[in-house]
Image (tube, rainbow, N blue to C red; front, side):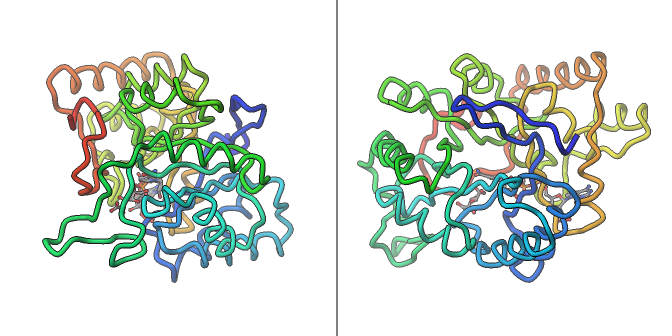
Amino acid sequence: MADKTFPLNNGQTIPALGLGTWQSDPGQVKTAVSYALQAGYKLVDCAYCYANEDEVGEGLAEAFAAGVKREDVFVVGKVWATYNTRVELGLDKSLKSLGLDYVDLFLVHWPLLMNPDGNNDRFPKLPNGERDIIWDHNHVDTWKQMEELLTTGKAKAIGVSNYSKKYLEELLPHATVIPAVNQIENHPSLPQQEIVDLCKEKGIHIMAYSPLGSTGGPLFTAEPVVKIAEKHGVKPSTVLLSYHIPRGSTVLAKSVTPARIEENKKLIDLEEEDIKLLNDYSDNLVREGKVVRYVYPPFGVKFGFPDKP
Ligand SMILES: NC(=O)C1=CN([C@@H]2O[C@H](COP(=O)(O)OP(=O)(O)OC[C@H]3O[C@@H](n4cnc5c(N)ncnc54)[C@H](OP(=O)(O)O)[C@@H]3O)[C@@H](O)[C@H]2O)C=CC1
Ligand SMILES: O=C[C@H](O)[C@@H](O)[C@@H](O)[C@H](O)C(=O)O
């Protein structure tokens, strides 16, 4: 299943499973990346904001030295919010750290601008401690810069991340290039079906982040997940990762633990009744207004998600 791919709207293919690197300690992520690629992972999800791209680059280099081919690895990067008016510079910095001359996919990490001239390169703050946001920035302008990147060859595909239906509907009428991907938080406790359906209709591939509920895997005890895991004799993590394949989405699993990196490769074919159980669980949470979003940084910006208006 680690070899499964999905088509993108620009003719590329994207692997169904990827290794996440957010909150992967610089001291551990080199080994994690190198281990994962040599174990058969084909996609690594990176970001300037994660402040570990140098070490991810060392992990890539180690894997390449061990025989993994660059063209067999799908590397994802993301322009950070302080670079949303300087997209090519943001990409150049990431490429330098990663030791690459192109990424396979480059995403707008979040649709807003933080002060490029603020008091910190990644997280500029105001004296009152709030994030230093440039409120009159239009996210469509960032997308226009992303489109220009395609002519440089430094990004093979471009896409977005953390785009709600509202933001996509603002963007799409102005897009010359339709985003190849929207990377969003996605799991049975946050199905975000309205975004997934819109993306499907427009040919935008979903990459699901925080599939285990992010730090500490809080979704492992969700009732249908436990039930389905017991039925198939697998771990809850396997059910949570496998959930995305019949949805047609790529899933990103973060781990710096070799045994878990190995375990997370073992995706299974869920049966129709398993999928129904998970969908019923999601529908109930949506109906009761009880969906859970684990990643919602304190930007103070209204991104237009129904659960976070
Ligand atoms: N575009 C965006 O804004 C965002 C993108 N992402 C991307 O998605 C990736 C995945 O999401 P993330 O939020 O990191 O969280 P995940 O849902 O992937 O969960 C990661 C956590 O689960 C643990 N874990 C991993 N595998 C197992 C397992 N088999 N059994 C038990 N525990 C396990 C990890 O621990 P350990 O590492 O110690 O093994 C870590 O604590 C990110 O790393 C990042 O690349 C994530 C959030 C936002
Ligand atoms: O990709 C992962 C997340 O989006 C992460 O980049 C943000 O949550 C960031 O740490 C922030 O605090 O704004």
